[in-house]
Every structure is written in C-alpha cells, then in structure tokens.
Image (cartoon, rainbow, N blue to C red; front, side, top):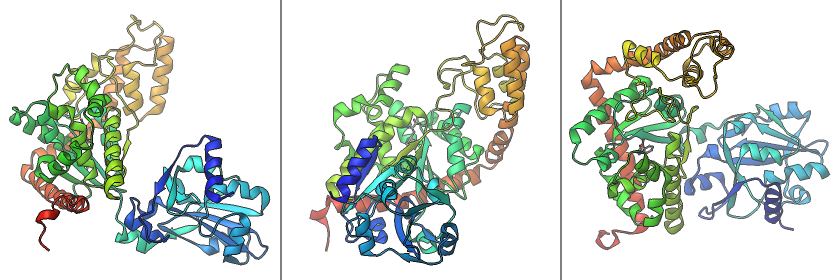
Length: 504
Ligand code: TRP
C-alpha cells in the first residue's frame, strides 16, 4: 500500500483531526521553495530526518525548519559513535517511497525496526506543524499534541540551534493583527480577553494594532466626534496596558484607504445568506437591539480585509469574535483556491478569561451594560464599583455559608489578585460563613488597584504628551499602509483586474 494511504488510514482510524495542505505550487521539495510559494514560515515546517548509527539503528530527529540539528548532542543522547544520513534504500526498507517520509508512521516502524525518535524541544512551542503526509505536493498540518499520539516512544530534547539564515529576514516574523471597534474606554474584561495577549505576544510577533474607526461608522455614521473621542480613548488604553510603540505598530483603520478596495472585492466572495448567518453579527444585533446598517451586517468582511491585508497568522480577540475570524479564513481559502496562494490562514486566540462577568453578575461585562470596571477608573471610582458588586444573593449575614463558584467577586479575585494564598483563605472562610463580604471586597479592591496603578500612570504619561501620542499614530499608520499597498498590488495582479489598462 502506498505511504500516503497508510498515513491517512492511520490518522483516520485514531480519529485525529488534521489538514492536508496544498503545496503543489512549489516547483520542488526544498523547504525554501515551500516557504516561498506557500502560506507558511520556516518555523511552521517540521522535517523528519533519518540517521543511521554504527549499530544500524535508526535515529529519527523531528526538528523545526528554522533550526539546525546539533549532531554531537544527538550522538551523546542516543549513544552513537557515528551518525550518517539514512540512504534511499534504507528508507525504502522502512516502507517510504522516495522523498516522502512522514512522522505519522513512526509509531508503527518502531514495532518492526530499531528506531529511536528524538523531538527537538522547540517543536513543542508550536501549536501545529506542517510535515510530510507521504504525498507529492502536499503537507500534513497537525496539532503537535496529536502528532505525539502516533509517534510511539520518543524523547523531547534540546538538540538544535537556530538556523540564522532562515531566522534572519529570509522569512520574517509571523504577524499579529488585532484591534477594537472604539465604543468608549476599555475595561478589565478586554484586558483578560485580549489586551494581555497582545502585550505578551508583541515580542514574538510583528504586531499591528488597528483602531477600527471604520467599524464604528457602521454603527453610527453621523457621530464622527464621538467616534474620534472613542478612538483616542482606545488608543491610550492600548498604550497604557503596555503596547510598546517601539515594538508594535498602532494605526488608524481609515488611514489606509486600500483596505476598502480589498473589502469591496471580498464582498463579492461572501453570499448574502452567509453574512446574515454570522453568529457574532446576530448576537450583537440581538443584544443591542439594533436595526443594523448594511455596513454592520458586513463588518466581518471588512474585518477580513483588516486581517488578511497583513497576512496575519494570529488574531488575539475576545471570544465573541471567533466567528468573524472564521469568516476571514473562508475568504482566504476561497481566494487562494481561485487565484493561487496569497493569504495566510489567520487563527483567533482568546485570552485566559474568555468572558468576564459584569460587576452586577450579568454574563458579560460591557460599557453599555453599566457593569464595567474601566482600565482608566480612578481609585475612588474603583472602590465604589467594587464595594457595590453583586455577590452570592443567598447570603444575608456574614455567618451564612456562601458560594464561591460563579460569584463575581471571586471570579475577579482569581483573575486579578496575584496573592493566591489570600484567595484560598478567603474562599475557605467564605464557604464556611467566616468572612464578611466587606473584607472580601476590600481585598479585591486592593488587588485591582495594584493592578490598575501602573496602567493609570502610563495613560497619564501619554495624556500629558499629546504630540508624542499623535506621532505614534501617524508613523504607525504610514508604516502599516506600506504593507497593505503591497498586498493589494499583489492581489490585483493575481486577479488581473486592471490588465486592460496596464502599460507594458
Ligand atoms: N470587530 C472587532 C471588535 O468588535 C474590532 C476589529 C476590527 C478587529 N477589525 C479587526 C479585531 C481585526 C481583530 C482583527 O472589537
């Protein structure tokens, strides 16, 4: 049976989800060529390298394509004196067709041959990898945790060093694009839902943050003054929580008119019925009791343009936005299928608390729900909000046994109080009826205040330096626009939309 069939059968029989990636655009099998023509970076790819030692044992190394193997280290680990690349006939003996090795069959091989498997620890940093699927022109995209299930016995070890050429500029860092529709100052729910992720990931990713003012006009086209105020507040909130303008690029959405050219092309790609079915849109219409504008119904398509124009692979967002990312993926896929690989498949990433309850115990914190603690709240406002928070409604006196689960005060403690011993002590006493609400809330206030203090300070820094803030936004928008212009030009030439007026 051919390699590919065996792999597919194996994966299907274990119920593991995987994706077959079309790499047929590549002219040869070199990793450089794959990266050049397909939607991946070196760090996404994983190679399966077969060596043979002096005892005719096979040593298999799985390493990311942006790393080089340190052979000495592997020798030591595997107790080998010499290591040579396995030859064509060795691989054939193991059951692979020429050039079509895949890690998916390694578990089986171990049952028949002396095979030792070492995975470079850097592989474990990836959520998914793209590796061989035993079929010419195609790759296997699989979650690392799922791949491990079919490997049999293996060891994770530090056996590589960076491949400097591949890491330096040949292919740049992966990108993040994210942002907020400005509807006022951001709150602590935004922080745990997405802001925190942005700040954390800005070192690792080339990060673009958009201030989505076009999206705001879809809600109220005639309120530009309000929108500008809201945009500015969201801008300051992003800086305040630690988006570093030296690392990340913050830009104003409307400052890149090319986005609308992409957007209007994408509008043709999405069926009307599909747009109306989008759960993010439907939920918001219901929740805010909107009579939505056409712009609002199609905001996920504008958002797809926001994301795809940067070829962003990661989009940190709140949970409610995941269906919007799904829409962007569909557009990317359909475009790539029709005209060739242009767009990277973006993935959403939700923060550690997907949906933070409001201070009133309602399911979701929101500014319009008047149940939000703002990142910019001063100490006094914070204290008022915390001290009047909803807790366990069945608990009347401090000596009543209280419920911790689902109790907003404890949810906030868990999310923002860094003193875990204090939380555990409070929870214990609360369930036993040995602590009053006041003490629990006062400690929560203290924890939140400590959390907000540096954020307020940074906000103040930029509030006092409006020129510096403005420069950040101007230069960010200029920089981001250059990237978008490139993408648009590529798209237009792939589509051939202007062929008839092109000068030779
Ligand atoms: N719709 C998002 C929100 O309501 C804001 C947004 C616009 C966005 N464009 C985006 C988020 C692109 C992530 C990526 O907050």
